[in-house]
Each structure stands twice: as structure tokens, then as C-alpha cells.
Length: 247
Image (cartoon, rainbow, N blue to C red; front, side, top):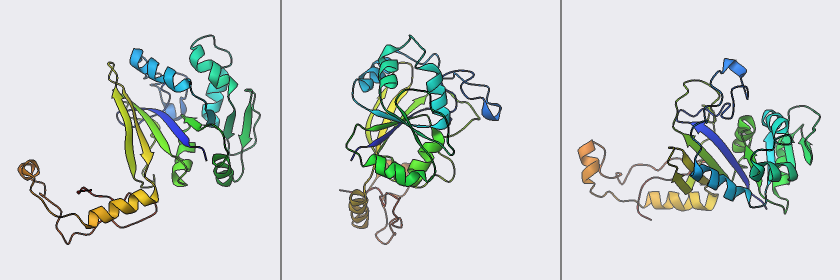
């Protein structure tokens, strides 16, 4: 079974709308498109270039597909991105039938979740999701995301589409990798979803946690340990069931 891996550029306040250009996505009156400009440096470029060297297929929402299809087949810039994007298989998730003009594109529409589950089971390269905020939320709601690469740019936007809305399902994740570029971009806090067995282990560790001294916590006014009779977070299919404690 392959993985579904998301890549999202977001601002400090969680906005992912139109990082690449002023006209990329102006919906809702958004006028700050292109906010990632000025933060690209050698570390960011090298990291992206390394990722592009491996095999992958694309899984995209309709709006992101339209943006990519209007640019990558026609550009002579960034060949290290354009070439693999143009050549790889692309799956496009849409609410309704549509014409796909970019080569190697396949439409997924109708009852999409079962189709995505089946697609994930294929013995094929990992599926990469770029942009596609609505699609990412659908994937998260159905437990289909294995890893998230969240590139955080040092800019505040105040308004715009946010990746994590109030109804985003709770889930436990673990940090897989992270790096800070000289420009201030946090290269991505790659986070892997905690599997049920991991969550169960965390719950057992939580239950066995005993209070212990914590001078710094005491100075800050926080509890120095978790009381023995304090309950762990309620178990659920999407929560990490974890609290701080010894392994």
C-alpha cells in the first residue's frame, strides 16, 4: 500500500491561499496572493529538488489542478519540477465531471472516498497532494493522510483560506523531520499520523504516569506532575490518547 503525502505552504496564521502569485486564487476578495515571494533560498530549492528526484504520482483537487495545468505544461522554468509534474500520473478529485487537458490525468468524481481508498491500495508510487485544501480536509476526515509536509512562511496574512478549520478532526501525529531555512521558512514539519497501535501504547503510558518534580513548571505556575487519579484523554479513533509521561 502506498502513502498519501500532503505538501502545503502556509503563513504563520495558517493561510494557504495563493502563495504562488497575485492571480492564483482571488476568491473571497483575497488580494495578497504571491506572499511566498522573497522567502525562497538555496535551502528551500535544494529540499524541493531532492524530493522531486524520487518517484511519485499527483493527487489534486480541481482548483489546484487547473492552476498547475495552466502553468507547468507551458513553462520553460524550473525544469526539475516541470518535467516530473508533466510526466507523472495525475489523479484529479472533482465534485462534477470535467475535461482534463493535462497529459496523464485521470478524473475521480462521484463517491470519491471509496475510490481514494482503492487508489491508495495500489502497488505504485506514493501519492503527493499539493495545495488542494478541500481535498486535504476530505482525506483527513477519512484517515487517508499518512504524512503532512507543512512549509511555514514567516508572514502574517490576517485573512484567507485556512488549512485547518474548526471542524478538522482530532488526530495524533509525530514529528518526522524539520529544518529552518535562512529565509525563515520552516521546512516542513513532516508529521506522520500515529497508527492505532501507537495511540494505544501512548494511552497505556499515560495511565502509568506518576507525578514527578518539575522546577521550571512550578515557577511558571503549571502543575509539576499529573495527579495519579487524573483521567487520560478519552480514547477515540482519531485522538492520539497521549499525555506527557515516561515511556
